[in-house]
Amino acid sequence: KGGPSEAAHVRSGTDGGIGMQPSDKWTVPLGHEHHRRQHDIGELAFWSEQCVDPLGLATELWTNSGNDDRGHKAVARTVQAVQMGRVDHG
Image (cartoon, rainbow, N blue to C red; front, side, top):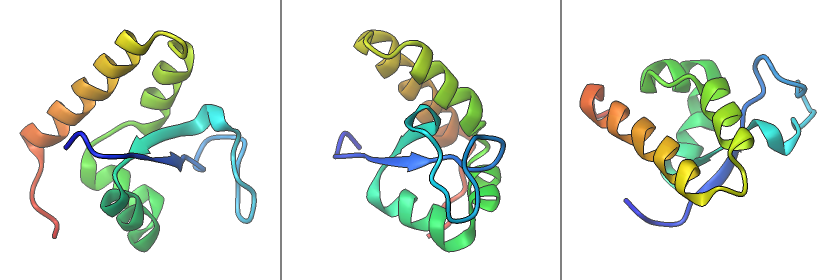
């Protein structure tokens, strides 16, 4: 909570692919443990488990880049939604 985040690239449905990193437009912030889990179980399984639309979040963050307040609010809404419906997967 409030710690450093890592840029997690969203590959599914973007300009990325196998062996090809998508553009930075398709990134969302994840803590280290969540980012590792995303890689360990696979992107689609991770986002399904979190009940998060990563394309929607990435698009909102990209659209509001340069507006820290809107970016923080988008992330906070997503974190809150995950916490409300989340089961501990650890």
